[in-house]
Image (tube, rainbow over all chains, first blue to last red):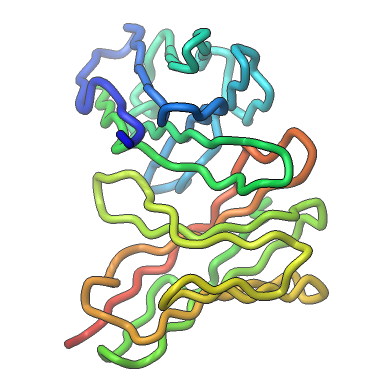
Length: 115
Length: 114
């Protein structure tokens, strides 16, 4: 079974631009979560989508948004990029069936550099 | 407010010995706990999880222990191997519809010496 895939793997953008990152979950997984990893803040939760609806949201500004499609694929968008948005963005998927394991499986990440 | 804490930034162990990684949490709503292993520039790899209804879960060389009264969990790796050298993160989630939101600790760098 293929794992979580993320595209692109690397991205360089300029301050003020916007960026869209894509995530394809493991086949059959219905929940997709996004995380930001930086050296200073560690791994921080951005948001989670389940059945095309945002189910949980972290403490990030409104410049960070996402969506999920009917095939469970997800995208996240960051508008008006700032230097501090430079980070590894990770996507994770989980099966999310009641009373079963809720472990999340991560993709390789997208390394975003804002100059 | 750091709700999940890994107080040891690093741990060094000899090959074949036991590695014990520790994690404390403050949020009493957390009821599902996970351990991940991570290499630089890669996504975390799931290792093992435990629900709050249990106090121990084993999977091969990995065992996770949960002490709910102390709000403490630990990961035991026996025997440790050089390939286990990586950063280890503990993570926690609350119940209901919040399982998709993981709160991570800051990580512990494990080095296993041959």
